[in-house]
Amino acid sequence: MSDVRIDDLPVRDELRGKSPYGAPQLDVPVRLNTNENPYPLPEPLVERIAERVRDVARDLNRYPDRDAVELRTQLARYLTDTSGHEVGPAHVWAANGSNEVIQQLLQTFGGPGRTAIGFEPSYSMHALIARGTGTGWISGPRGEDFGIDLAAAEQAIAQHKPDVVFITTPNNPTGNAVPAETVLALYEAAQAAKPSMVVVDEAYVEFSHGASLLPLLDGRPHLVISRTMSKAFGAAGLRLGYLAAHPAVVDAVQLVRLPYHLSAVTQATALAALEHTDTLLGYVEQLKAERDRLVAELRATGYEVVESDANFVQFGRFDGEGGAHAAWRKILDRGVLVRDNGIPGWLRVSAGTPEENDAFLDAVRELKKEQS
Ligand code: PMP
Image 1 (tube, rainbow, N blue to C red):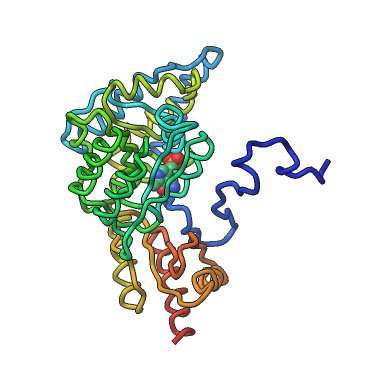
Image 2 (image 1 turned 90 degrees about the horizontal axis):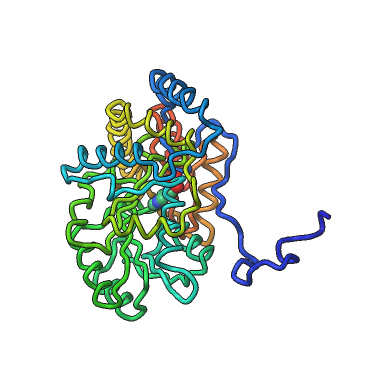
Protein backbone atom coordinates (compact mmCIF):
# COMPACT_ATOMS: atom_id res chain seq x y z
CA MET A 1 0.00 0.00 0.00
CA SER A 2 2.54 2.57 1.17
CA ASP A 3 4.69 2.21 -1.94
CA VAL A 4 1.98 3.74 -4.14
CA ARG A 5 2.73 7.39 -4.78
CA ILE A 6 0.66 10.17 -6.35
CA ASP A 7 2.30 9.71 -9.71
CA ASP A 8 1.42 6.00 -9.70
CA LEU A 9 -2.25 7.00 -9.71
CA PRO A 10 -4.09 8.05 -12.86
CA VAL A 11 -4.03 11.73 -11.78
CA ARG A 12 -4.48 14.53 -14.33
CA ASP A 13 -1.26 15.27 -16.22
CA GLU A 14 -0.99 18.83 -14.91
CA LEU A 15 -0.88 17.52 -11.30
CA ARG A 16 2.04 15.14 -11.86
CA GLY A 17 5.19 15.99 -9.94
CA LYS A 18 3.52 18.94 -8.17
CA SER A 19 3.50 19.71 -4.42
CA PRO A 20 0.51 20.98 -2.41
CA TYR A 21 0.43 24.51 -0.92
CA GLY A 22 2.60 24.15 2.13
CA ALA A 23 3.46 26.90 4.58
CA PRO A 24 5.28 24.88 7.27
CA GLN A 25 3.15 24.48 10.44
CA LEU A 26 6.00 24.14 12.93
CA ASP A 27 5.64 24.16 16.69
CA VAL A 28 7.88 27.09 17.63
CA PRO A 29 7.41 29.83 20.25
CA VAL A 30 6.91 32.70 17.78
CA ARG A 31 5.01 32.02 14.54
CA LEU A 32 5.08 34.95 12.15
CA ASN A 33 4.83 33.08 8.86
CA THR A 34 1.24 33.00 7.60
CA ASN A 35 -0.02 36.57 8.00
CA GLU A 36 -2.46 35.53 10.68
CA ASN A 37 -3.77 37.99 13.21
CA PRO A 38 -1.91 37.15 16.48
CA TYR A 39 -4.73 38.17 18.81
CA PRO A 40 -7.11 35.47 20.03
CA LEU A 41 -10.77 36.43 19.66
CA PRO A 42 -12.00 38.53 22.61
CA GLU A 43 -13.98 36.65 25.26
CA PRO A 44 -17.33 38.46 24.66
CA LEU A 45 -17.10 37.43 20.99
CA VAL A 46 -16.28 33.83 21.95
CA GLU A 47 -19.44 33.87 24.10
CA ARG A 48 -21.50 35.33 21.27
CA ILE A 49 -20.23 32.68 18.84
CA ALA A 50 -21.20 29.96 21.32
CA GLU A 51 -24.66 31.50 21.67
CA ARG A 52 -25.26 31.84 17.94
CA VAL A 53 -23.90 28.37 17.20
CA ARG A 54 -26.09 26.89 19.95
CA ASP A 55 -29.10 28.48 18.29
CA VAL A 56 -28.37 26.98 14.88
CA ALA A 57 -27.29 23.62 16.35
CA ARG A 58 -30.90 22.63 16.91
CA ASP A 59 -31.60 23.04 13.22
CA LEU A 60 -28.59 21.15 11.92
CA ASN A 61 -30.97 18.44 10.73
CA ARG A 62 -31.81 20.95 7.97
CA TYR A 63 -29.56 22.31 5.25
CA PRO A 64 -28.32 25.86 5.87
CA ASP A 65 -29.54 28.99 4.08
CA ARG A 66 -28.12 28.19 0.65
CA ASP A 67 -27.86 31.84 -0.32
CA ALA A 68 -26.52 33.03 3.08
CA VAL A 69 -28.78 36.07 2.86
CA GLU A 70 -28.38 37.37 6.44
CA LEU A 71 -24.61 37.00 6.26
CA ARG A 72 -24.37 38.70 2.87
CA THR A 73 -26.54 41.52 4.21
CA GLN A 74 -24.21 42.07 7.16
CA LEU A 75 -21.08 41.81 4.98
CA ALA A 76 -22.62 44.41 2.65
CA ARG A 77 -23.28 46.67 5.62
CA TYR A 78 -19.67 46.27 6.78
CA LEU A 79 -18.38 47.17 3.30
CA THR A 80 -20.69 50.18 3.08
CA ASP A 81 -19.76 51.44 6.56
CA THR A 82 -16.01 51.11 6.01
CA SER A 83 -15.81 52.38 2.44
CA GLY A 84 -18.58 54.97 2.27
CA HIS A 85 -19.63 53.23 -0.95
CA GLU A 86 -23.13 51.79 -0.93
CA VAL A 87 -22.97 48.00 -1.28
CA GLY A 88 -26.10 45.80 -1.09
CA PRO A 89 -26.45 42.06 -0.42
CA ALA A 90 -27.06 41.42 -4.13
CA HIS A 91 -23.49 42.64 -4.76
CA VAL A 92 -21.94 40.29 -2.20
CA TRP A 93 -21.15 36.58 -2.31
CA ALA A 94 -19.51 34.51 0.44
CA ALA A 95 -17.62 31.20 0.53
CA ASN A 96 -15.24 29.14 2.67
CA GLY A 97 -12.28 31.53 2.62
CA SER A 98 -11.36 33.82 -0.23
CA ASN A 99 -9.51 30.84 -1.69
CA GLU A 100 -12.91 29.30 -2.39
CA VAL A 101 -14.17 32.62 -3.76
CA ILE A 102 -11.21 32.61 -6.17
CA GLN A 103 -11.85 28.99 -7.06
CA GLN A 104 -15.50 29.74 -7.85
CA LEU A 105 -14.44 32.74 -9.97
CA LEU A 106 -12.00 30.60 -11.95
CA GLN A 107 -14.58 27.83 -12.35
CA THR A 108 -16.95 30.44 -13.72
CA PHE A 109 -14.69 32.63 -15.85
CA GLY A 110 -11.61 30.42 -16.40
CA GLY A 111 -11.41 26.68 -17.04
CA PRO A 112 -10.07 24.50 -19.86
CA GLY A 113 -9.05 26.49 -22.93
CA ARG A 114 -8.98 29.75 -20.95
CA THR A 115 -6.20 31.64 -19.18
CA ALA A 116 -5.61 33.83 -16.14
CA ILE A 117 -2.73 36.24 -15.48
CA GLY A 118 -1.19 37.49 -12.23
CA PHE A 119 1.74 39.83 -11.70
CA GLU A 120 4.37 37.87 -9.82
CA PRO A 121 5.71 37.49 -7.22
CA SER A 122 2.20 37.49 -5.81
CA TYR A 123 -0.17 35.21 -3.94
CA SER A 124 0.85 31.75 -5.11
CA MET A 125 -2.63 30.26 -4.72
CA HIS A 126 -3.92 32.23 -7.72
CA ALA A 127 -1.71 30.10 -9.96
CA LEU A 128 -2.43 26.91 -8.00
CA ILE A 129 -6.19 27.38 -8.12
CA ALA A 130 -5.87 28.13 -11.83
CA ARG A 131 -4.14 24.78 -12.24
CA GLY A 132 -6.80 23.01 -10.16
CA THR A 133 -9.56 24.44 -12.34
CA GLY A 134 -7.78 23.63 -15.61
CA THR A 135 -7.16 27.32 -16.33
CA GLY A 136 -3.89 28.17 -18.11
CA TRP A 137 -1.64 30.41 -15.99
CA ILE A 138 0.34 33.35 -17.29
CA SER A 139 3.00 34.82 -15.03
CA GLY A 140 2.91 38.57 -15.66
CA PRO A 141 5.80 40.84 -14.72
CA ARG A 142 6.50 43.09 -11.74
CA GLY A 143 9.21 45.75 -11.58
CA GLU A 144 12.49 45.60 -9.62
CA ASP A 145 10.77 47.41 -6.75
CA PHE A 146 7.94 44.81 -6.81
CA GLY A 147 5.47 47.42 -8.08
CA ILE A 148 3.41 46.75 -11.21
CA ASP A 149 5.12 48.34 -14.21
CA LEU A 150 2.04 49.61 -16.02
CA ALA A 151 3.43 49.56 -19.54
CA ALA A 152 4.78 46.02 -19.16
CA ALA A 153 1.56 44.79 -17.56
CA GLU A 154 -0.61 46.39 -20.26
CA GLN A 155 1.58 44.79 -22.88
CA ALA A 156 1.24 41.34 -21.25
CA ILE A 157 -2.56 41.71 -21.20
CA ALA A 158 -2.67 42.85 -24.84
CA GLN A 159 -0.42 39.97 -25.88
CA HIS A 160 -2.04 37.11 -23.95
CA LYS A 161 -5.66 38.32 -23.86
CA PRO A 162 -6.32 36.46 -20.58
CA ASP A 163 -9.87 35.67 -19.48
CA VAL A 164 -9.12 36.62 -15.86
CA VAL A 165 -6.67 39.23 -14.53
CA PHE A 166 -5.60 39.07 -10.87
CA ILE A 167 -4.37 42.20 -9.12
CA THR A 168 -3.41 41.69 -5.48
CA THR A 169 -3.38 44.91 -3.50
CA PRO A 170 -1.82 45.13 -0.98
CA ASN A 171 0.28 42.45 -2.62
CA ASN A 172 1.34 39.25 -0.87
CA PRO A 173 4.22 38.53 -0.20
CA THR A 174 5.75 41.93 -0.98
CA GLY A 175 3.29 44.09 1.03
CA ASN A 176 3.06 47.04 -1.36
CA ALA A 177 -0.24 48.43 -2.69
CA VAL A 178 -1.14 49.01 -6.33
CA PRO A 179 -2.33 52.59 -7.03
CA ALA A 180 -6.00 52.93 -8.04
CA GLU A 181 -4.97 54.54 -11.36
CA THR A 182 -2.94 51.44 -12.24
CA VAL A 183 -5.88 49.16 -11.46
CA LEU A 184 -8.13 51.34 -13.61
CA ALA A 185 -5.67 51.32 -16.49
CA LEU A 186 -5.34 47.52 -16.28
CA TYR A 187 -9.12 47.18 -16.23
CA GLU A 188 -9.29 49.24 -19.43
CA ALA A 189 -6.49 47.18 -20.99
CA ALA A 190 -8.31 43.95 -20.08
CA GLN A 191 -11.57 45.22 -21.60
CA ALA A 192 -9.79 46.25 -24.79
CA ALA A 193 -8.02 42.90 -25.08
CA LYS A 194 -10.91 40.48 -24.50
CA PRO A 195 -12.94 41.68 -22.46
CA SER A 196 -11.85 39.81 -19.31
CA MET A 197 -12.80 39.71 -15.64
CA VAL A 198 -10.49 41.66 -13.34
CA VAL A 199 -10.24 40.28 -9.82
CA VAL A 200 -8.76 42.65 -7.25
CA ASP A 201 -7.65 40.59 -4.25
CA GLU A 202 -7.99 42.91 -1.25
CA ALA A 203 -7.32 40.29 1.46
CA TYR A 204 -5.17 42.80 3.39
CA VAL A 205 -6.89 46.08 2.55
CA GLU A 206 -7.93 46.87 6.14
CA PHE A 207 -4.22 47.24 6.98
CA SER A 208 -3.58 49.65 4.11
CA HIS A 209 -2.71 53.34 4.35
CA GLY A 210 -5.06 53.80 1.38
CA ALA A 211 -8.71 53.01 0.76
CA SER A 212 -10.52 49.99 -0.69
CA LEU A 213 -11.18 50.07 -4.43
CA LEU A 214 -14.88 49.25 -3.86
CA PRO A 215 -16.03 52.60 -5.35
CA LEU A 216 -14.53 51.49 -8.68
CA LEU A 217 -17.26 48.83 -8.96
CA ASP A 218 -19.74 51.44 -10.20
CA GLY A 219 -20.23 50.98 -13.93
CA ARG A 220 -17.61 48.19 -14.17
CA PRO A 221 -19.45 44.84 -14.37
CA HIS A 222 -16.23 42.95 -15.11
CA LEU A 223 -14.57 44.04 -11.86
CA VAL A 224 -14.59 41.84 -8.74
CA ILE A 225 -13.20 42.76 -5.32
CA SER A 226 -12.28 39.75 -3.20
CA ARG A 227 -12.06 40.06 0.62
CA THR A 228 -11.62 37.82 3.65
CA MET A 229 -12.35 37.62 7.37
CA SER A 230 -9.07 35.69 7.85
CA LYS A 231 -6.87 38.73 8.40
CA ALA A 232 -8.55 41.91 9.71
CA PHE A 233 -11.24 39.98 11.59
CA GLY A 234 -8.60 37.69 13.06
CA ALA A 235 -10.64 34.69 12.00
CA ALA A 236 -8.43 32.56 9.74
CA GLY A 237 -9.86 29.43 11.38
CA LEU A 238 -13.41 30.45 10.49
CA ARG A 239 -12.84 30.14 6.72
CA LEU A 240 -14.95 33.01 5.46
CA GLY A 241 -14.13 34.92 2.33
CA TYR A 242 -16.40 37.09 0.22
CA LEU A 243 -16.57 39.20 -2.90
CA ALA A 244 -18.25 42.38 -4.01
CA ALA A 245 -19.19 42.81 -7.66
CA HIS A 246 -22.07 43.51 -10.02
CA PRO A 247 -25.09 41.32 -9.06
CA ALA A 248 -24.73 39.46 -12.38
CA VAL A 249 -21.32 38.20 -11.18
CA VAL A 250 -22.95 36.96 -7.97
CA ASP A 251 -25.56 35.16 -10.09
CA ALA A 252 -22.82 33.68 -12.29
CA VAL A 253 -20.75 32.15 -9.45
CA GLN A 254 -23.90 30.45 -8.19
CA LEU A 255 -23.73 28.30 -11.33
CA VAL A 256 -20.61 26.57 -9.94
CA ARG A 257 -20.93 26.76 -6.15
CA LEU A 258 -21.76 23.51 -4.42
CA PRO A 259 -25.24 23.56 -2.93
CA TYR A 260 -25.16 24.51 0.78
CA HIS A 261 -21.40 25.17 0.58
CA LEU A 262 -21.46 27.50 3.59
CA SER A 263 -22.43 25.57 6.72
CA ALA A 264 -24.93 26.96 9.21
CA VAL A 265 -22.14 26.92 11.84
CA THR A 266 -19.89 29.01 9.59
CA GLN A 267 -22.67 31.49 8.84
CA ALA A 268 -23.56 31.84 12.53
CA THR A 269 -19.91 32.31 13.55
CA ALA A 270 -19.27 34.91 10.88
CA LEU A 271 -22.40 36.82 11.90
CA ALA A 272 -21.20 36.86 15.51
CA ALA A 273 -17.78 38.19 14.42
CA LEU A 274 -19.44 40.93 12.36
CA GLU A 275 -21.32 42.06 15.48
CA HIS A 276 -17.88 42.73 17.03
CA THR A 277 -16.43 44.60 14.06
CA ASP A 278 -15.42 47.67 16.09
CA THR A 279 -13.36 45.68 18.61
CA LEU A 280 -11.72 43.63 15.88
CA LEU A 281 -10.84 46.70 13.82
CA GLY A 282 -9.22 48.08 16.99
CA TYR A 283 -6.72 45.21 16.77
CA VAL A 284 -6.09 46.17 13.16
CA GLU A 285 -4.97 49.62 14.34
CA GLN A 286 -2.55 48.03 16.82
CA LEU A 287 -1.18 45.76 14.10
CA LYS A 288 -0.70 48.66 11.70
CA ALA A 289 1.35 50.46 14.37
CA GLU A 290 3.39 47.28 14.95
CA ARG A 291 3.87 46.84 11.18
CA ASP A 292 5.20 50.40 10.97
CA ARG A 293 7.51 49.69 13.91
CA LEU A 294 8.85 46.57 12.18
CA VAL A 295 9.55 48.59 9.02
CA ALA A 296 11.36 51.33 10.98
CA GLU A 297 13.38 48.92 13.16
CA LEU A 298 14.37 46.69 10.26
CA ARG A 299 15.60 49.73 8.34
CA ALA A 300 17.45 51.03 11.41
CA THR A 301 19.17 47.64 11.65
CA GLY A 302 20.35 47.92 8.05
CA TYR A 303 17.83 45.75 6.24
CA GLU A 304 16.04 46.71 3.05
CA VAL A 305 12.27 46.72 3.40
CA VAL A 306 9.51 46.94 0.80
CA GLU A 307 6.95 49.62 1.71
CA SER A 308 4.10 47.74 3.41
CA ASP A 309 0.34 48.33 3.33
CA ALA A 310 -0.34 44.89 4.80
CA ASN A 311 0.07 43.10 8.14
CA PHE A 312 3.46 41.76 7.07
CA VAL A 313 6.77 43.06 5.80
CA GLN A 314 9.14 41.77 3.15
CA PHE A 315 12.75 42.33 4.16
CA GLY A 316 16.25 41.50 2.88
CA ARG A 317 18.51 41.36 1.23
CA PHE A 318 20.29 38.13 1.87
CA ASP A 319 23.03 37.73 -0.69
CA GLY A 320 24.24 34.64 -2.41
CA GLU A 321 22.64 31.43 -3.55
CA GLY A 322 20.28 30.21 -0.83
CA GLY A 323 21.10 33.28 1.31
CA ALA A 324 17.47 33.93 2.22
CA HIS A 325 16.87 30.31 3.18
CA ALA A 326 20.00 30.22 5.35
CA ALA A 327 18.80 33.39 7.12
CA TRP A 328 15.31 31.84 7.51
CA ARG A 329 16.91 28.84 9.24
CA LYS A 330 19.00 31.04 11.58
CA ILE A 331 15.93 33.06 12.58
CA LEU A 332 14.11 29.77 13.19
CA ASP A 333 17.00 28.56 15.37
CA ARG A 334 16.21 31.58 17.56
CA GLY A 335 12.62 30.37 17.95
CA VAL A 336 10.99 32.64 15.36
CA LEU A 337 9.28 31.25 12.27
CA VAL A 338 9.11 33.66 9.31
CA ARG A 339 8.35 32.85 5.67
CA ASP A 340 10.66 32.04 2.82
CA ASN A 341 8.49 32.51 -0.27
CA GLY A 342 11.33 31.52 -2.56
CA ILE A 343 12.02 35.09 -3.69
CA PRO A 344 15.81 35.23 -3.96
CA GLY A 345 17.26 37.52 -1.28
CA TRP A 346 14.03 38.23 0.61
CA LEU A 347 12.01 36.91 3.56
CA ARG A 348 8.59 37.88 4.89
CA VAL A 349 7.52 38.45 8.49
CA SER A 350 3.93 38.88 9.70
CA ALA A 351 3.24 41.53 12.34
CA GLY A 352 2.62 39.78 15.65
CA THR A 353 2.04 41.02 19.19
CA PRO A 354 4.60 43.56 20.49
CA GLU A 355 6.37 40.73 22.38
CA GLU A 356 6.53 38.48 19.33
CA ASN A 357 7.85 41.34 17.21
CA ASP A 358 10.50 42.10 19.85
CA ALA A 359 11.64 38.45 19.70
CA PHE A 360 11.81 38.69 15.91
CA LEU A 361 13.72 41.99 15.99
CA ASP A 362 16.23 40.58 18.52
CA ALA A 363 16.78 37.61 16.19
CA VAL A 364 17.38 39.71 13.08
CA ARG A 365 19.64 42.16 14.95
CA GLU A 366 21.81 39.22 16.07
CA LEU A 367 21.80 37.88 12.54
CA LYS A 368 22.96 41.25 11.21
CA LYS A 369 25.81 41.35 13.73
CA GLU A 370 26.87 37.84 12.74
CA GLN A 371 26.87 38.78 9.06
CA SER A 372 28.84 42.04 9.36
N1 PMP B 1 -5.58 36.34 -0.96
C1 PMP B 1 -4.39 36.66 -0.47
C2 PMP B 1 -3.61 37.74 -1.13
C3 PMP B 1 -3.88 35.97 0.64
O1 PMP B 1 -2.66 36.26 1.10
C4 PMP B 1 -4.66 34.96 1.24
C5 PMP B 1 -4.21 34.18 2.46
N2 PMP B 1 -2.91 34.01 2.68
C6 PMP B 1 -5.89 34.66 0.68
C7 PMP B 1 -6.33 35.38 -0.41
C8 PMP B 1 -6.74 33.53 1.17
O2 PMP B 1 -7.28 33.78 2.37
P1 PMP B 1 -8.51 32.96 2.97
O3 PMP B 1 -8.78 31.79 2.07
O4 PMP B 1 -8.07 32.58 4.32
O5 PMP B 1 -9.64 33.94 2.94
